[in-house]
Image (tube, rainbow, N blue to C red; front, side):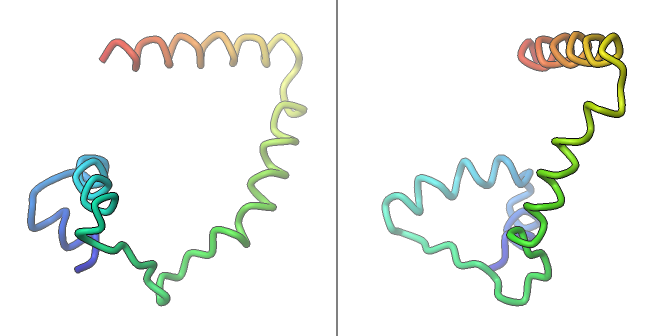
Length: 82
């Protein structure tokens, strides 16, 4: 069964389903198999993602980079409290 179908059938979020599936996989009660027809190719995307992440800060002044880091830290702190 596909993950999407399990999410819909069990009325769980994908994240909650992962927490359910991992122990089952560890006990070898299930096997997770990559869908060969899945159009996403993560290896092909890795290079462009790394290039973007490396060049992204250069688009901001040092002051804006510092502000962005401060805002992201605040966001992270707020999410940790949820």
